[in-house]
Image (tube, rainbow, N blue to C red):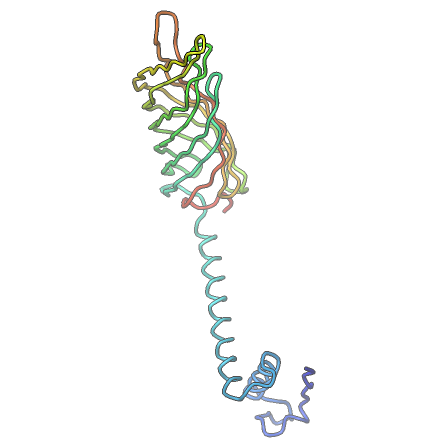
Length: 247
């Protein structure tokens, strides 16, 4: 549909100033008519008015949403005394095996570029018992952590190094072997261990990539024979709260 272009000389019946140009009220009325002609084709006057009201409401909703989003982004700069919660997932690599890890880590910013937290990590891995790979087992660790960020607030890229100490509950190890055509299974009870972690990585905006070495004491199941519980992890995640790095 072609919308006719309205000129001041054609605007009879609408408010105008002394020079013949449409007044503010006239322009507003013309804007309503033109807008309604564009979004309504062959609609009744009642339908036209209803659609126009809906258009105004939608514009207001979008404007308020964008305004609030801008305010949040500005006010959420990474800073001291802010809380944040990190969620991570990745790959765990023990000695001779592999598995998956999941972690949640609430943290508190003690400075603009330092924070402390409590990391709760669960790793499902297949470890080696001597020359034999054991069945999948799960460990859960609880560690107090500290991270230092090399960022002054001028960039959204923030490299970091950190560490922590804590306690790990270790799942029992079981394995099935075949000897002369006969399958035999054995289970090794494993006690929890104290340990620590060292990590490094970087954050970009709200996302985080980290390489972590989890140091956990070995389990001895026979004189001179042990199972290594330490593992290396690569994780990718994001965090909520605490703000963004770039101020």
